Image 1 (cartoon, rainbow, N blue to C red):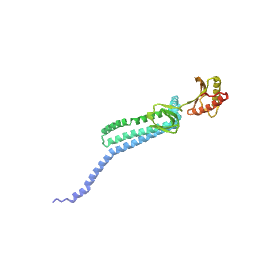
Image 2 (cartoon, rainbow, N blue to C red):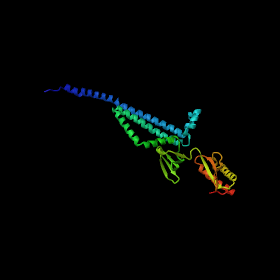
Image 3 (spheres, helix red, strand yellow):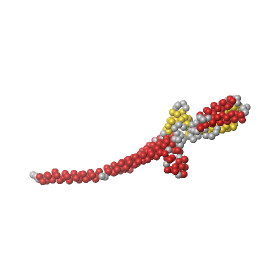
Image 4 (cartoon, rainbow, N blue to C red):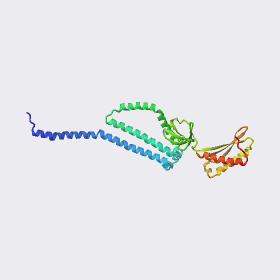
Length: 309
């Protein structure tokens, strides 16, 4: 019978456990300072980079939206002034467009940074990302074909906002829909017509837009009088009516220049058509036109000229 000495037993209880425990701790330390540390550093660096990028994009968008960019160093040079003057974001709706584009850029940078960080982490933990990338590529192509109309809507929405084709509050004609724009998003534009119906228009399907309130507008009034009327007398009456509207405190500031009375536009055996038109500020042409009609009626009544049918 083999008998284990007390010395050998003591060595097993003392020296061997410490030796094996020390080796184990060393291996764990090497492992922790390897892959896990690199994964943590990748995640930390990605989070910091993303936070800085999102903060920078938001700051720039808010500066443009609030108009602070116009007072920046760029406006100190002649070239900078020209750039700012030509910049479409300098219009009244720059705040909406700047914040919308800022939101799109923040979402895009989040997706890009997150995807790159995920791929780097998978590589660190030993995952072969080549088959994954191939699968994602195939899936992306399939989704692209299936959601191409959605992608088209989003891309069209971005260009609609960047080009400032229309904004909230504009009176527009899009296809057979006429109304006021209530919302402009990346995928859908909402338009409220005169009957109160809210139309949802996909941006990808917006092929032709008529904006009635962008830049400036024209208030045009067609006046039909009997064929035997004194044309010069009628023109003078129309001129007095237009001048009175221009001199009015309520409507004078809404007009760009003096109204003009155009000569005979059309004529038939029953009537003669003349036109009064005035260039106005955007969205104010209807108010000016109503004021012109009221004054024209007074002037024609004063010279005893009736309107023709």
